[in-house]
Amino acid sequence: MNSSGPGIGLTTVEWQPVDHGRHSGHQANPARVYNYLVGGKDNYLADYEQAQRFLRIAPEIRDTALANRRFLQRAMAELADEGISQFLDIGSGLPTTPNVHEIAQAVNPRARVVYVDNDPIVASHGQARLAVPGTTMISGDLREPDKILAHDEVRRLLDPGQPVAIVLTFILDYLDAKDDPYGVVARLMEWAAPGSCLILSHVTGDFTDETPGDRDWAPLSVSPVTAAPRDHDGIMGFFRGLDLLEPGLVQLPAWRPGIGAKDDPSRVWAYGGVARKP
Image (cartoon, rainbow, N blue to C red; front, top):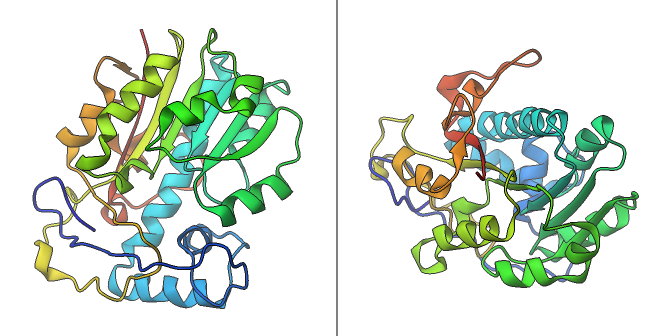
């Protein structure tokens, strides 16, 4: 992982190219590896083996992934309770119960959700399994926000004149400076109506004392993606012009923990926050 912040403890992780057209499971796929880490069932032996290599090097990866899912569930429930009924989940990954639409529609059965991912494996799984009224899955790349916003399904399901929650959990980590990640977020929030919210989580190195050379990340190779953890200040930049909801941008377990499973903060390397457009 390639840090844009100081003292990350994570060096570059280059995911090697794979044939995204195949579904055989003979090679590990990043979405399926993550699916395994959070307890999903859409993964194969190759993904399990790759995940085990991750965990031998950095066992905190599973804790961080699980904490991210729980943060998203809490944030979704909060916003749905506040009356937001439109959700745009970009970089959604494979379906994992409870999904965004399940949380939103439990509060408001008429809630509408658009899932977006640039991985064909994710898109094919999602289109097959998300045949739910008010819910759709499209292929799209966060680095091209205007194409996402102009997609027929986005235009059909989401009303840009009403508040929408834009979900960017563990996805901005994969955009580096050349991708203009801050500009991407600004464009999405420019499109969204006042009262819209941003749900964001991001991997960081702020919670480890290690230096970049302390870990050997060479074995972590599955796809052409390089992760870029950022420090607190770097992640705060994504909320420019927005009003952060309490408790602000915090380590994932500290965001409105409530009841249910608790995460060990010492094993969670990520921040999360929710902000509203004034």
